[in-house]
Image (tube, rainbow, N blue to C red; front, side, top):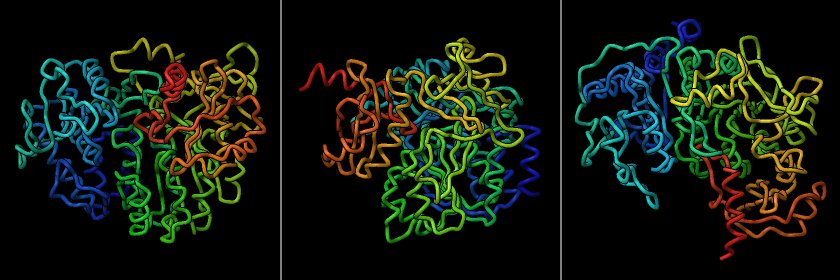
Length: 534
């Protein structure tokens, strides 16, 4: 069996997460999967597995969940410390016909409690650290779990009121249960930049369709170089990333630690040819371009989605690669729509690219995109319109919030919440989230792109509305070093409408589970500082 044969089968029958590891093992069971951490649920498995061993581990975990009483059609909330076993446990739940609800470890206990309540007495799968609460945060023990859940499972260890999966090690294996093609198969959540996250329902059909444009991107890799993946294990994007790498028979490096020193060591040891990571992680890794270990020398393709990527970041990473024709492929999309448009950047042009040009419609079988007027006038750079997406890969609904989903849906078209315009050549320019638009600023993201490119000492720049709705640049610097005011003034001469910058430590930036800056929360923080300077 070949990966291409399995891929064609997925296009017809949908992507079933619980079957994927076994299918990949049938393609090439010897392909290696390497981790930079130990698995909480399988502490003795080690950090280097073959795909066959990985598939067997998922089957083992599925048997344990069945022995614990989890059954087809039941919702299993997976919320535990960040670890690759999150993805494996989601696949294990899928394998027995349950519906995994993947909640980020970054969510606070109150938010998790609200989402569990929305699901309606699911089984909760977690770990002792999350129940007790990581340092400085309340744990799930503070919630009335007995009333919110059907049962509480932990991956290992002991905790009052919870059953450990370790107790069912060696449980009899169970035949796979396949979910209907258009019914809920996996539930993930939105970033929560504007409030309580929404629960996004994915089906086997929608998950399979989303692989189409990305399958072609991986076709650019002529060698079977390792694929390094550093994205949240709970995210819908992780389903696609793992599926593609497994079916393409590519060695996989699963990264949990984003610290630049650790990344440099891992990349120097494993020499990936493809890197997929969060935009903010890539930004944090920029300085590794000058590292003597040359961690990015082997990279042929950098890829990112989730959020805006700045031209400075792309340029520095591409120039640190020693591969001919190295490229940075940016995908624009969101959890509800999957990959919508994309664009490749090259080392000779990335530094001068317009970061707001997020790309063109991808090849046949991918999404359609349009920009709809907000006021009856044609959408332009100065009068951006609503960005909408249509294709069969759209998520099915928001769990228990169909009305909220329907409010964004107009027939086949989904309103993303972003605003922008299209150029004469058809390139989609995404200027801002509608809720983040600031009077007098064409695009906050464009300002950030330009100024970050002029001030390498900046590690982050976010423009938000100030107490008087004026555009306030919030800045962070490498090592929190004070910024030279003269250099700032020289860098922002093109943007006289900006207020004086506010510098804060980068650790104080409110972020989502995918490291996006929560702009509304940051704006509220500025208001509080003004009202309570102490």
